[in-house]
Image (cartoon, rainbow, N blue to C red; front, side, top):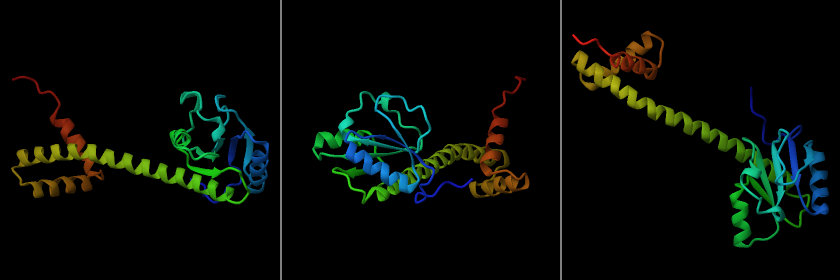
Length: 195
């Protein structure tokens, strides 16, 4: 299953929390043109529907509690920014927005803000996956090292030869080095009966 393109917006679902009716009508008109399905929403209400995008007016900030504004995984957040004071920007940054728009709102720039928001979400998800893989490999590295030490002692081999043996065994058994190393370490840690 391929992930949707950040440029293709038709069928995406958005909720809007915009105080000014003029700004809300501009967003609705643009979202209709882009094929984005829209629902109104008020911060503090639970998000009881699947959404891809939350567009929130900074006039709603601060959101009562972080728990009241739990952003679903993979959901982009765009903030409509009206004031650039440090305190207001701090509240906006606490939301970890994917993109922003400046008030007074115009139709120009909405598509770009939405595409950038979805692209940021996609890149962040990719980075999280890569980080998780790297952390798993780092954890597995300790197991591989333990298996290497075990082979070195059991076979009387230097480290390069022990690694070559481990690699060859893994290829013969059609396993990854990490899988084979975990099995070898687990076998050596099985309790032995006292003699």
